[in-house]
Length: 490
Image (cartoon, rainbow, N blue to C red; front, top):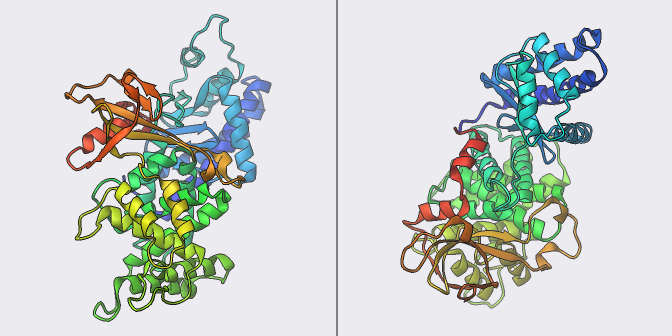
């Protein structure tokens, strides 16, 4: 996926917000005025101006969708302030009356097509026995000669296996975040605003499919600097959500994780004398020099990035006490996330270890200066069996941990007691029986701890995913062709 320039992104955001405003205005105009009324002129002109600005960047058909509080133009999620967010929510409710999700501009429409489309949309009333209101509306619009605009159906829900197309939101924001950070690494000075925006998008995605995002962060072998930044942000945001912090605090921590890892983009001035860890930490100090103003948040980011290595430093051989002052909680959490990722990916001798091995080792012997309580919270949030873990069940079935329902949803922020203290539910997708037979999809999903066909469903062993990556993908995305369609890949 290619990243557009920052300037182009800003143009899409500005034009997108105007498009949101004037689409809503055109719908209200269609309710009130006939087609020959002059009230159509100004909103039509403004809508076309916004659309032209977006087309100059995208150079293709434009899909505008509002769903579950998120307004999106093609692949761009709009960053809405309080006023535009309220407008988006009202527009979503208006679209929902027609069972629609948005509008597809297959080409630049003329004013006559615009007026006819919104007039039909606002005044359409389906027959009492109509089974598909969206299809009926589309037919009515096409019958009126409108071919340049189409009704976009409501996207399927993204909040659970068996309830929609799971994985679309997680895959999209994960890949988009990596592409964005890849662009960020090429800039001098580093733009904190881009890192902040990426962190906010990842935190938003965590609210929908946090467990799958953690699974993506721990899978695969392509460990680039930009991917490490995104993975660190996901892990630290997940723990913050488990602690019941606010969405802003989660974004602050994710931003710190991204900017710390970005330090790898700067060349080490003297590898013989300065370690990679020290060089990365020194990048934090560059933020002070390059920052436009000194703020408390900037100070916290700098301290956390400088401290992160101290948080996992081993104890002095001649002393039972850790060396130096204990790092701040930000520094400890950032260090723990990085340490966990390194152990899962490379472990000892360059060979990675399974999450359950790393998690148990952390619980048994917390590294360096990290408080045991911090380790407990971290492991409880991430889970000893995160999504994507390949397991053997008690009856010999081969399965993949596919769903962990304990830290999902936007209601978790600022929650007391902390969400991490509540029980969780773990689902697995059974793929093959012990004798190698494929398990039908309708029988695949089971809940650990429930009574099944051969007793209580339990995990007998965890297996290596090496060579079985295709099984993991099938276990997480049971309808990959539908996911590709929703993502616009085909």
